[in-house]
Image (cartoon, rainbow, N blue to C red; front, side):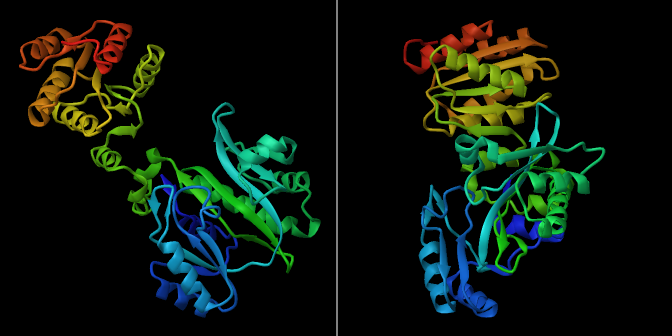
Length: 383
């Protein structure tokens, strides 16, 4: 789950990281009032969960409150990469002398967090990695030890930070790590962390991505989710507690188990098809859950065929078959469907499907099922 800049920076402030004075506005009039309170020049920043806001005209400098109101009106009328701008952040403008990148992500190979720093801040870290990889410094963090002063001093020296800023950098780096761990984040990023004209460090931008699996521990953070980022189908899947990601292919996939779902997508691509979604109905799925999942798949107008790949371990194949029929009776689709049911009660599941009034193409192996689904999507196979 992604957080907006203003949400991320407010969390950073709770962990002692200095951020600019500012507030969020939903109307130009609110933006003017905030700018009047702050005084002096301000930055008006669109709050949408996409990159490239500045290039899209979503970040503007305003010299006074009247100009802040005008800039906010322009930005609130924008649609950036398909997302409407509903809020703007009004921040006190900073006297920027130098920009630094500082972030933490999970290194899945090392199986621990890694803090990344670069003297080349203000641009995407991926671009720095491509053009000047030597400018990126990495520090793996042992979760049993955490961040220590010797860690942050090493990192600061590696990016050439002035000795006078070492103590402040240590405070910010350790605060960022504490925010990362405390919020169950998969990413916490300050870009840029700026050196101001007054010789201080200031986090003028911030980004956090939270691990959905940890949100049950943070109901206050879960409430901050921006539903504009999700498609209606993805929102319905989340509310039904289904693991679903909508893609742009033509073969809808319903699978139980994330690994099996990935394998199903891969083999579909291997045989020339394109998956329309990632969908894991999970272990122990009952008929109502399966029906909900199928409705999500069939709601995608790009879907030309549906592939069911169910391994009956905890999940019973007959329960899956009942869910498929329940959804088909409600939706009445006119699409070819391929089913592979293997495992617990597979005979009962196949019998239920065979006795139904709906045409179903069956398969016994994953390769066979994928080939049939690709052919059916092309109109080359019928039940």
